[in-house]
Image 1 (tube, rainbow, N blue to C red):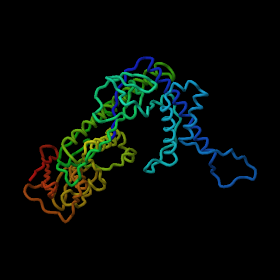
Image 2 (cartoon, rainbow, N blue to C red):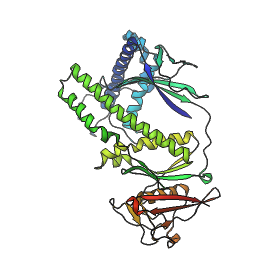
Image 3 (cartoon, rainbow, N blue to C red):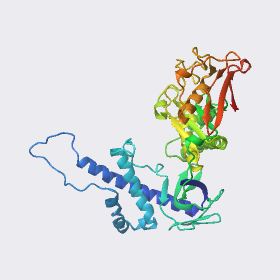
Image 4 (cartoon, rainbow, N blue to C red):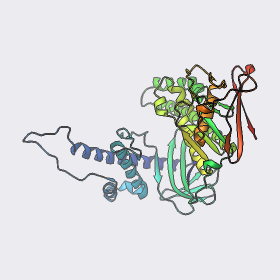
Length: 432
């Protein structure tokens, strides 16, 4: 199991200057190696299938790869002795970054998804470098020892868990200072409970009216951090655009803008972590939709969707659940909002329709609660069949969910509409 802990660094002026020197040299080397890849790519391909009788053919050479470019590093230090101050493995990691970027451009990642053409890094776009290996005990108190760089102070706000070993350290420059990200590893694998033995599952439906709605009827309000900060960001952005390019005033305004955006991102991330913790503390299985967030981000609701940060939330949920031995399961979202969670019949609804009212079985519920129950049913393998349709008994407008047996317990979900809450759904759970 691997995790990443990030700490803020307290550097001296000389250490900050040295980090900037390292970043600048690594950026130049990155651009040089990337240009070498592009030169080979352009010289060894042709857009037509025939040539004139007399033409110039460039001297063919082997395709530069990770190993061939790594062999050029000793020669680099001979021709440019100032590169000797950079630790050797940090330079090798720079070569690895070029190799990964170019391979994703040509072949794609492990899922076959290709990235765009790699860009040459400007001064403010190369912001980090990595130490691939550290000593056995690199931390002493609040001091971290880095190979060839020396000792640096950090805000050691949480200790490394017992049994974990520090594998790598990445120094990153951000708008408000420098940080170190420690990649830690523990070879023990947590036992993940099987789906058949979960005792307290929950389904969640992501939305923009509420951040998420649970299958028990409760909801988490959406914070909209970016929307609330837009007025302040607009004012700072205007100061950046009005200042002269290259001036100190522009640099100060750009730094202030970067800090403002970082604050929005940090508060959103903190909200995601706290929401995930609350879910996993109360439930051993969390079912959610497999959302095509990149596709949704191209719609007219893109700003609100990106402000909610669904992708980051689901990524945190998946990692934290796996580390805790719990289950976070994604399901196909097709028709989860349309199908009735009581009888399985499709009840077409428009986006403006917030209440699910089934004409076949009389089940009435909040649209999002109905979708969350459908998501939970798909996750635990209890799909709702139309044959299970039965008339609602008792109070009019109340729909009862067929029994769902998990670990010997019989759970009955009851969802009702209270007229005093302006159409909001109230969900209760009864164990028998």
